[in-house]
Amino acid sequence: GDLSAAPLSAAQMGLAKGLTTTQLDDTVRGMWFNTSSGVLRNTDLRLALRDSVQWDSVNAFLEKSGEAVAGGYVPPAATVDGTEVYRTAHNAINPITDPDTAKANLEKGLTALELDSPSAVHLEVLAADDAVSTDIARYVVQSWQKHLGITVTLTLLSEQEVAKRVKNGNFQAALYTHTPTGLTGAENLSAFGSAAPNNLARLKDEAVDAAIAALRV
Image (cartoon, rainbow, N blue to C red):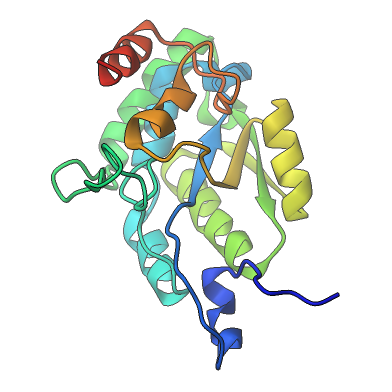
C-alpha cells in the first residue's frame, strides 16, 4: 500500500508540499471532435466551433488553475530528435475568437448538411466531472450557444468513462486529456493519420496523411 511515486494534476500540486515533484508536460487537454460522427463530419462546422470559442476566457481560467496553454496538439515535452524541443513560439497554434467567420462557416456547414437553422445542430459534449474539466467545458459550450445558437448537451462522467468512450469512438465531442505514446512531435502527430490505430479523432484526410508522411523523411 505504499507509493514511491504518484501522478498529480496541476490542481493537486499544492498537496505535494514537502515532496519532490517532477513536471513532465507530456499531456494535452483538448476538445476532441469525432470527425466520423454525424454533423462533425463537416469541416466548415468544425471550423465554426473552433472560431466561436471565447479563447481569452478559457486561457485565463487555465492559467488560474495552474495549467499552461498547450499551443497545439503536441505536448511541450515532445522533441524533434530527442534533444531539440518541438514546440516553439514559431509553430505554436494560437486560435482566436472570430464570431463573424464562425457564423459564415456555420452557414456553409448548414447548407452542406441540409439543415435549416443553427438550432438543428445537436451536439453532446462529454467532460470529466472534476471541477476544472467541468468549468472548461462550460466555457466552451456557452461560447457555442452564444455565438452560434446551436443545441449542445453537456454530459459529465468519470474521467475513466470519458477515456473509455473516446477510445471506443462512442462520442461526438469530448473534453479529453490525452498523453501521446510517442516522444517526438512527428510521432505525436502521426496519431492523426487515417490508418493510425490510436486515431481518436477518426480523421481521414489525404492532405494530413501526406504531411505526416513528409515528417518521417
